[in-house]
Image (cartoon, rainbow, N blue to C red; front, side):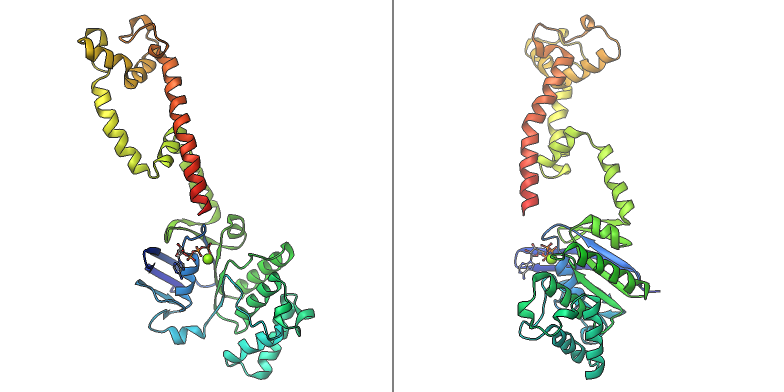
Length: 345
Ligand SMILES: Nc1ncnc2c1ncn2[C@@H]1O[C@H](COP(=O)(O)OP(=O)(O)OP(=O)(O)O)[C@@H](O)[C@H]1O
Ligand SMILES: [Mg+2]
């Protein structure tokens, strides 16, 4: 069975801002797919392209078998969408809003009215059905907008941050509505900033950042991946890498710095036998300290060490601890600051 939603290499730029940078998605029919990502990751842009509201600069996408650009008109009749911000008419009553959506989908007056009443009940809005929407609270508007997305009973549904602004009860009842829809065969793509919500609702989750998918899997698989990564990196290299923004930069810098240090250390020659200036470099060299620490840990006595002196820094174990402390003092505040800045963006 072809996927209900498929996207390949979607790119979208707003001036200099690259909102989507090679977004790929594949959502099997009758499943809930979660797009999880921080502010500005490209979730809304993806939804807008898939719901034909925006054209991609590159790449292609199909929904329910229709190309989102070439078949946009026919596709619109087969999808329902609820945007990040409720799109409801303030001057109409709640029921009138839903009836209008029904008429736009050519449901006919009677069916539109019946559908509106059904959905108002489902979203706990029956009491406010005949009040103008301008008097609704934020959560009520949100629920009305979600109801609007369901009017035509679409086979594919897009919900952009559907539970933002909902109280816990409304949130739980929306989760139930989504579960019912999927049991009936509807495909749902929803965006969220909460792993908990994606975990609760979505069978497959795509973690999105900087306009493309950086991880894909079930909630459990994603948690395992994160756990695995954590065990593979040391605290120091992770903080240094974070401070320098990318692991690649850290790797390159580390090679440039460490190669000369290795050749000027006591790794190959006893530093006591080196000529004066080189002996000083070898004795103060952090690589010498690391090598000496390793030798000491493997049972070589300190007196047999090529690096020996009266300075505390020339004592291998003390020096190793001091170097580690120095690295952490320099890089932890830097990393923390960069992390905070990234999070607040
Ligand atoms: N109309 C626009 N004009 C200029 N830049 C835009 C526009 N819409 C989105 N962007 C930029 O594109 C990037 C992705 O935005 P998008 O709205 O898709 O993110 P998002 O994942 O939905 O974020 P949020 O969680 O805050 O809703 C952001 O950097 C944003 O500033
Ligand atoms: Mg958004």
